[in-house]
Amino acid sequence: MVTEAGSATQHAGKKVVLLDCDPGIDDAMAIVDLLARRAFGEIDIAGLIATAGNASVDDCVSSALSWLELGERTDRDRECSRADQTPVFKGAAGPIEVAHDFTPETHGEHGRGYAPLARTEGTASSMHGARAWSELSIRHEGELHAVVIGPLSTLAAALDLDGGIPDRLASLTIMGGTFCGHPGNTTAVAEWNSHFDPEAAQRVCERFAGSAVVPRWCGQNVTDSAVISPADVTEVLSATRGAPVTRALAAALRFYFEFHDAVGEGYCAKVHDPIATALALQPALGRWSPARIDVATSDRLTRGQTVAEFQPERWRGGDYGSGRRNADILVEVPGHPGVDNILADWKARHVRWVRG
Ligand code: RIB
Ligand code: CA
Image 1 (spheres, protein in one colour):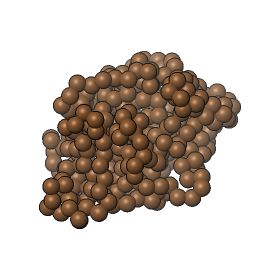
Image 2 (cartoon, rainbow, N blue to C red; image 1 turned 60 degrees about the horizontal axis):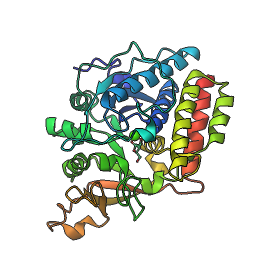
Image 3 (cartoon, rainbow, N blue to C red; image 1 turned 30 degrees about the horizontal axis):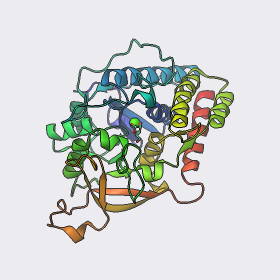
Image 4 (spheres, rainbow, N blue to C red; image 1 turned 90 degrees about the horizontal axis):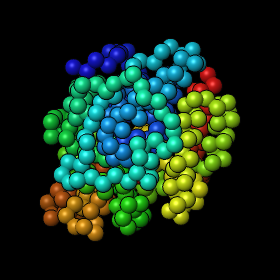
């Protein structure tokens, strides 16, 4: 049984969040944003699941523990009641069917860029992340808002373990895929999370087909416009007077700026994950379209491509998947400057949290 603090009734009225991540630099921005929201009483966090992706699963566990420890130190510094200990669960060590290829040039060898994250005394739960998906969905039945901002490997394993997970969730939001003809960041047609483990992504698509909870997919077609700049980091660093958590994020982002510059995107960073977590908690910020997603797995050229049929009923019973709706796809964040507003909110919330 999960021993995370807080009973279901203690969460009354708040969204309870489960984050499955592969920290990762933009994952770190999402983690600290959830800590800020918890400090303001907006949410509770049922747990973090670390899944291999941007770094090895052990490095992802270690980074998750370190970012949480930095967050708890921030909470103590602002004399906020000591946040509940957030359990961290070790998830899948790689894709469910193929070997994994890490890309250390993107987030750094350990997924932290230049952030000097100290090793923590904290340790991961002895419960595997796949079991944690099941246990937490039971413990928080009907109130658990699950967010996946890395490969879908652990969730796919969890669905094999417990087919009842989809109908127990309050919501599922996935940062992954790319839609509406927007090019991938890993191949011409595939986004990184779905390319890392296409079989897992397809298994999630199949298992959620027709379920009461329709997964929300935040794809690169929208999150690519979430660009943070060195000026944003300077602004937040100065507003927080160089707080430890902000300094660590700044060091992580510096690495990410160098990576984006090296691949011709300019000295800035596309930060996908904090957009997905913000939309998970405030879906009304986005415009979503119902669809049927299937993920290409068999062909080398298209592996990881998220193929979306926006009129799935056309194919019911056809050879195109089962034709049943299994997704709401983010098509835009309306208003100008849309996604930039979400990033501006992230900065303001971070400063308010750190400054107390
Ligand atoms: O394609 C972007 C996604 O891949 C983000 O979640 C990033 O952290 C990497 O995991
Ligand atoms: Ca990620």
